[in-house]
Length: 331
Image 1 (spheres, helix red, strand yellow):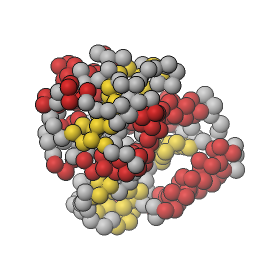
Image 2 (cartoon, rainbow, N blue to C red; image 1 turned 180 degrees about the vertical axis):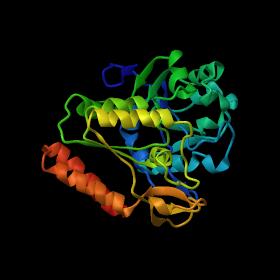
Image 3 (tube, one colour; image 1 turned 120 degrees about the vertical axis):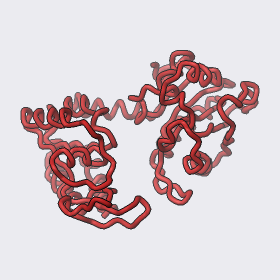
Image 4 (cartoon, rainbow, N blue to C red; image 1 turned 60 degrees about the vertical axis):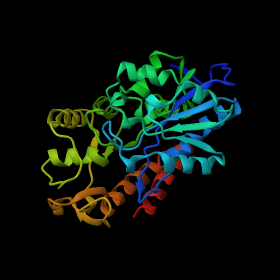
């Protein structure tokens, strides 16, 4: 896939299908964290400047191919519009009801957002016909959803088979960041990695174990690690049947002298909507779920980062100070 910046693309009047990741947390129809929305703004502004007709494809949650009203992208479209100070047309129509003539009417430099792409079974199945249908909506496809790019879904992988495809500015930024930790790495160095699934990140973790002093695992991945090592995680999200993957990670960590760190304490509640309570890992009840890392874990991570500050260059120092500041705010 070609780099959007490296191409002398003529986009004026072209329908550009822009795949982004807008899977942001929403509580009571209110977006509680906007960093993923803000990250896509540079690519959108470039496309506006080039007078493209922008058609945004994205998702939120896991509706499993069904329409779930609480997972509509409409409030996200409204938030993005306010950040851009520009109107966004939100198209609620089902994919099979959207006509090419309707999309052609989008004026140059304008934006339309389609409804949650995961409302359709064909998306996660990477259905060939669904991919073709999506591709028919645009002249050019741009993937700027770095966090979804490992998924073999119609709007990520399938669509790229049928129209000219490029990746956007956010992916360029992420690739440059990855190059720094793979080719320009300076020890001591610590990695913080999260997400819901260890199974999709096993190769990444095993490659990075060779390069890092510490790997801190959080999120759903940490729950899976904790359960495997004998901790009760209540009704927290986790993966089953990952014993062999976890053993592989632990064996490699010993082989390459990389310390694997999981939460010592966590914030738990009986539902995501309840106020969380800080508890030691050993104190979690069967009816509780883990929402976040706890105070002792944050303090431990801070100490590791403070040690590294003594050895870091100025760029790394700024990143570490930012991480410490964010953890302080989350206490």
